[in-house]
Image (cartoon, rainbow, N blue to C red; front, side, top):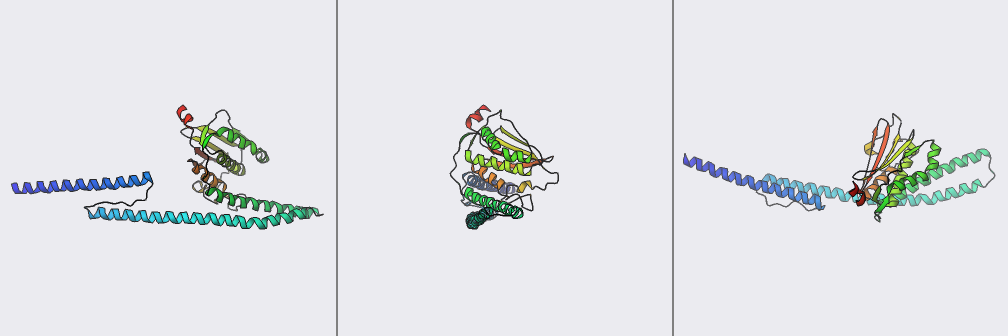
Length: 301
């Protein structure tokens, strides 16, 4: 009986020691994974294992890392190729478009009938749209490569007010009003030129698609927030989760949008360590841009 108890005690002790070493190995795996995430390294998991299943787990984790790295490199390569294609297309299209516009200007000087003038104006209008599209392509490819970011204290409220003033003609032409409160000055840590481009794109998108007045708010929470809200048609088919994708547009005919405006908003916002999102509630479409606050603003909160 004593021998049996002794044997069980020894087995129990061995089992406890084995479990202890397994816990150490699992802790080691978690430590390496945490370090990989925190330091953004691509080091494989390395262990001295006493368990074949844990050994296979480590091997499979490293295989997943390798697949992930291959996919990342492929994305980087494809992005570079995409930017080159857009830049080349933009350049190649500008030359013939310049010639088209030149001949249109020459025709406008001729003695044309009213019908001919009307047709020429239609052609000029479409040539201008094509020019805008080419410019969007070129601008997007340029912004994707832009690393010269000048982060400094900016008055977000003032910038939004100036952008609204710049779009007064478009706002009045649409017959809508913009509700914006200038009372609170919000200071953000951002690039002023990028913020102007973001707000201009948000305004153009809102003016283009709104069926009523527009509400814009600039507030501070843990971050600086720009909210642009407008009413939309009840049957509007907007896929919010795809809204900031390149070339996405809810206008299936693609007659009024290049689908690049909001993707540029996302691109620039993320370059300034911010984020952007959208939602729809009761036919009110809202886009929010969040940017880091100045430290002085954070202390005030």
